[in-house]
Structure formats: structure tokens, C-alpha cells
Length: 517
Image (cartoon, rainbow, N blue to C red; front, top):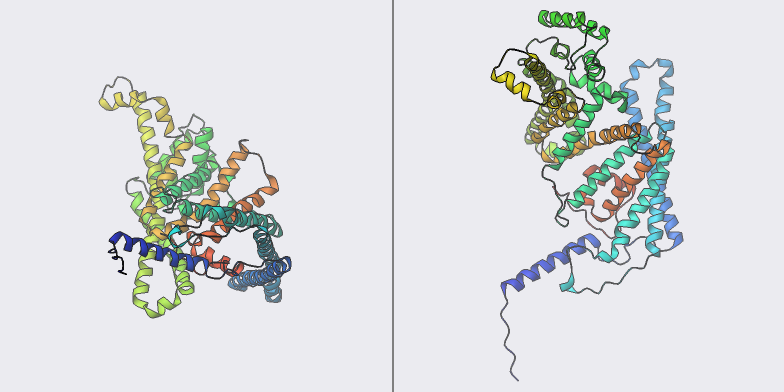
């Protein structure tokens, strides 16, 4: 009996076989090869698993918070009298804040493990009958309930209960951070190749929107941001605080407090030209004022608006350089000490370049805003003079009079400060791509908080009262945990590491893939 002739292998068949083997390997690495690696199955095992995890998270939280408190206390130990130093150390190690942090993390981990394991053990898992040629790129949608909904519900419930152990004054900050991390994870998931949703330069656009919102509330609605953040803006922007107050009053009330103008005029670094200009403004204080803030108010030590930005950029760069040098150095020593020892020269050169780039980017932000503010005031004053001139038919006068009044008034409206804030965020494009998300997450929680304050004050959204931070933390951690259980590579590396230490390894996942760029 003759054998049937063998069909020659085709290139397409070999390609399909290689893809199938690669998908099988990926499925093995992500899901494991043991059917028992799915967590506890009965009630007693679930309770034991939740209790052990909660106790471990409590200990880690207590030690971490105590260490941080002790570090800050030691930095200011010289200011503490000797008779109270022992009490200060005892309070830093065993204070109320450490106990609250331990209770918050322990309850979160225990409740999350218990709810998730009970829900998964009670759900009916469909048996997979897919063969080697039926493997898809992702797990089938039939497990969507177990994969996404259960972790989200468990994370939301655990966060709502856990955050209640913290002080009410600390809850908004925790909730903002959780919500920002959740939004970051879900944006990365939706922008992956599977879903095809991607916004070009979305991180820069989001950062610009946040900076526009923050600069708007800083200059126009200061009641919408915390005092600590407002003090940071005053220090980083490098302009007189009285100038910010005068600008706010001119936009809203068309007048200002003379005491603020007198304070600026008493500065030792004010130029004679700026002193004369401000004296003229002060003499006509009782008359209707222009809504455009005088440039001499914002930079009293420099007369020329054109020469001021380069000097201001250099001044802000010198102010930012030590701050980000300390941040980069601490990150390098704590997160990558092995790389520093193995390649010291290359690592130090790379860190120096990163420090300089970040410092220049952060110095450009207020410089761009200051240049736009001076340009806006000068343009508004020039258009006002041209539109009010009579008997002159020059081209500039005709163009100025042809402009609608709404366009001219928009230059000095409160919304113009939001637009300038958005332009202020564009220097982010020079920052390293993987670091843009870090800066975005620094401003996103505060921007969302200010939006919520403005909407509540306008009656657009209901006042959630004391339950607002709890709701925000619940929604944020629901998003974080759903992403962590399914596609953890879309979370930032610090978040993954913290959750891995608190929650433990994900059942059924042997490998955390590198984070997608």
C-alpha cells in the first residue's frame, strides 16, 4: 500500500504555526499552567487568606508611615526643645497617623481579598474547549464578569471602607491620587492596540488643560485651590503677590486696593521708570481703571517687557535646578543603585541631562505665561488707544476699529487666563516621554478638585459633603484594581510594586509584562 504524497509546507502555514505557538507561550506565561492557582475556594480559606493579607498590609503600612514621619521629624529635630525630643520620636513612631494608615491599608486588603475570592469561588467558570488553532489574542469575553467586574466591585467597596479610617482632612488627597491613577490606567488600556483609541500627544494635551485650569483658579478663583498649593504657585511664579491681587481685582471689579500698589512701590529693586508709572496709576485710582494689569506690577525690577523673559527664565531655572536635582538624585539612589554602581559615568551623565531638561521645562512654564501676560496687556492698551483715536485714518486705526468689541474684551476676560495656562503647558513636549505621565499625575488631582469646587459653587453638581472623597476613592480604586488584575502593565511601575506588596501576586499570572510605551 503506497503512502499518500505529502503536501509541501507553505510559508503561510509556517507563519500561522509560529503565531499560534507565540500566543500559547504568552497564555502560559500570563495564566500559568496550574488549574489550582486561582485562589482559595471555600469560606474558611477565603477568611484565612483575607486575614493574613490584611495583617501583612497593616504591618507594612504602619512601618512605612512611621518611617516617613520619623524622617521628617529628624529633619526638624534641631527646632524641637531637648525636653520634648523623646516625645517627638515616640509620636513619630507610634502616633495616630501610623495607626490610621495601618488600619486603612489592612482593611482595604482584607476586604478586597475576601470579596473577590468569595465572588470568584461562587461564580461558575466555563470550561475552555479551545484547541491550539482557536487561541485568540486575548481571553474570551465570556469571563468579562470575573475578569473586570469582580475586581472593580471589590476594589471600590474596600476603598470606601478603608478610607474611612483616615482623617477627614487627609481623605481628599488620598481620593484624588486614587482617581488620577485609575484614570491613567484606563486611558492606557483604551489606548492599547486592542481598542485602537489613542489621542496624539494626549499627555501634553491633558497637562495643558490641567495647567490652564490651575492658573485660572490661582489668578481668578483663589478659593478653589488649597492654601498650600497657592503658596507654591506664589513661590514658583516669581512675581509679587500684590501683583496677583491687583490683577484679580482689575478683572473682576475694575479697581484695586491702593495698599497693594504702595507695597510694590516700596520695593528696593523697583526701577525709576516703573515707580513713575505706578505712581501715575495710583494718582488716578479713583477714576475708572483699565482691566489690563500694568506690566510694572508684574516685573517691577525690569522696565522692558522684551528684556524681562530671558532674565526671568534664568532666574526660574536657578530656582528649579536644586529641587529637581534632589528629586532625580533620590530616585537614582533608591530605585536604581545597581545601575549606578555598574555604569557610574553613563548613569551620572544621563541623570545630569535629565535634571537640566526638567529644570528648563519647568522654568519655561512661568516664563511663557509671563510673556503672554505682558503681550496681552500691551495689545489691549494699544487697541484701546487706536479705537478711541479720531481724525486718524491710518491702516492700524482702521483695523483696530474693524475688530468687534467682544474680541478686544476677550483679551482681558477671565477666560483668557485659562487659554494662557494651556499655552503654558506646551513646553512639556521637551520632557522625556515616559516622564510626562508623572508630571501629569502631579497636576491632574488638583485640577479635578478645583473643577469640582467651581461646579459645586455654581450649583451644577450636587454637594456630596463628607461622602465626596469616599466616592472618589471608591471609583478610583475600582478602576485601579480592575486594571491591575487584568492588564497590570498599563499601570505605572510604582503602583504595580505597591499593589504587589499589599495585595500579593495576581492568581493565575506568572509574569508582569513590561509597561507599554
